[in-house]
Length: 112
Image 1 (spheres, rainbow, N blue to C red):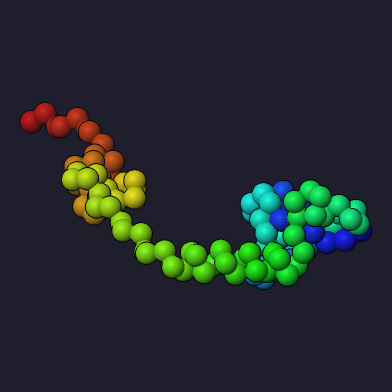
Image 2 (image 1 turned 120 degrees about the vertical axis):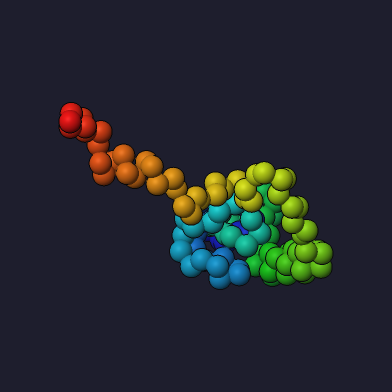
């Protein structure tokens, strides 16, 4: 058996990844990530499209450099009348009448 990078499915990696974002087996989040590895039969890694540690490290480094070169994403303004990020706006001052009704239920008034 030999280690092979870039061939494991999400959650099926053998151990920690190249970037050290996790250190245990079964913690990979994406399929076929060049950062994660698993054991394969000796001589089959290249045949199934896998990478050596050095190749995987170079690919990860190139991916991170490309990500850093991207311009930052511009956030779109929320349409008028809609809360940002799909969250509901909380009412700071709910109507007092609903509280009063809960505290003082309707009682018959004394006939006088």
